[in-house]
Amino acid sequence: MIAMKTRLLAAGLTALATAALTTDAGAADAAAGRQKAKKCQTCHGIDGIAKIPIAPHIAGESQIYLETQLKAFRSGKREHEIMSVIAKDLSDADIADLSAWYSSVKITATMPQ
Amino acid sequence: MIAMKTRLLAAGLTALATAALTTDAGAADAAAGRQKAKKCQTCHGIDGIAKIPIAPHIAGESQIYLETQLKAFRSGKREHEIMSVIAKDLSDADIADLSAWYSSVKITATMPQ
Image 1 (cartoon, rainbow over the protein chains, first blue to last red):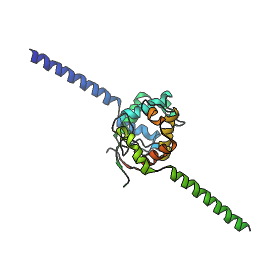
Image 2 (image 1 turned 120 degrees about the horizontal axis):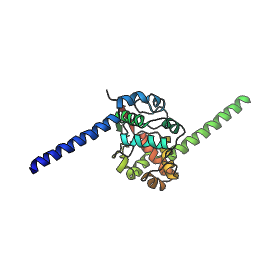
Image 3 (image 1 turned 30 degrees about the horizontal axis):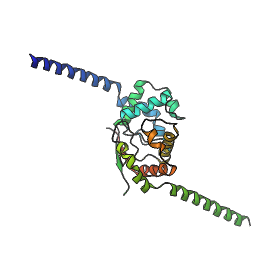
Image 4 (image 1 turned 90 degrees about the horizontal axis):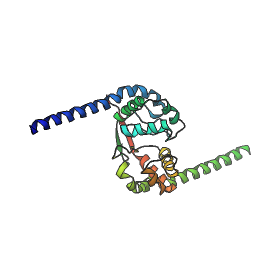
């Protein structure tokens, strides 16, 4: 009886965890983000390697870092003459998708000898 | 006479430009920055590849971008619970050196297929 309850509990937790993961995955669509990134690529590149020195490379940054920065620009907590304007028009879904795209890029670093 | 003045002017401008470049180069020492980066590496890695999701990769970011962000954290223009504290104790030379170190790392990006 205890074993059955344990199995049911485990099954319930697995279902909950799966639902949570599905929701997260549904909210952040890297392929959609790649399309939306057309408005970012002049400065940050479509691969997240910046085209101009004042813009950061954002390739491979984590989902949470990118979302946090875009939301900070949108709210005014972080300010930049260009990004504050760009971020103002982004929905939560746009931010999730753009962050999913740029975080999906893999980067490697090579230190100078 | 005009030619001589032009040559003198050109020589003067070259000397000024050289002095400016020398000053800049002297102010940003990547090797010194690598040593100073020991206080950054727990979060950002010694190569600029972040160790934790909330910290950005800073490998290969431009000198001007890195300096601007560190100065923004130091002045309070940009805020972060950790970086605001760290940056408060950085001198202009520290900021120049750290920026020189992390900007000297080469990065490559690979987009998902």
